[in-house]
Image 1 (cartoon, rainbow, N blue to C red):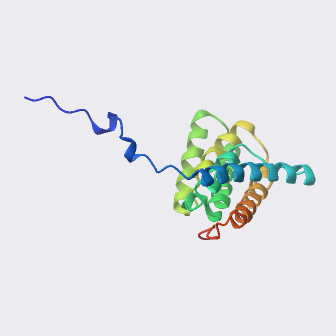
Image 2 (image 1 turned 135 degrees about the vertical axis):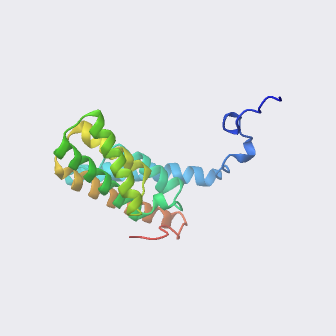
Image 3 (image 1 turned 30 degrees about the vertical axis):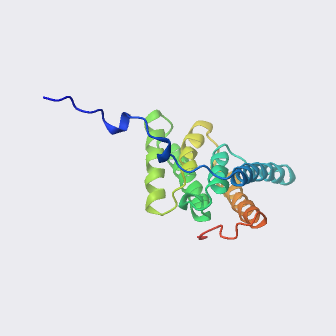
Length: 173
């Protein structure tokens, strides 16, 4: 009886299987895009007195500026995913309270609803956790979630135009 070879999942992958390295220009532009978008959110917040910023928006910037072709980076997914996931977090905490079980339920429901509505946006998966741990009121859905996501999409749209990417977004809503 010969020994079984190790499972392919535990063997190191050759470098040729890694995703291609982005060009230096793409790397710099993605980083600048994330910085510009974040600064814009803070500027809007200071100017308006409204909340425009929440932690998952940092991850949204990674998608919108580093991977703008991804379905997860499209306006439908950015706005819809954050709205759905935040609504789920607010609803579950209101109806069932906050416990490890209800937090897990909210993340699972948000994930399923984003898939079912074709609004999957990975950073929005953090929204039920944020909502259920911070316990904001329902106005959180408008500010920062709706205002912030719309502002991020607007900045991404403008930024990609200025930097020569005229194909973002691939689709809107």
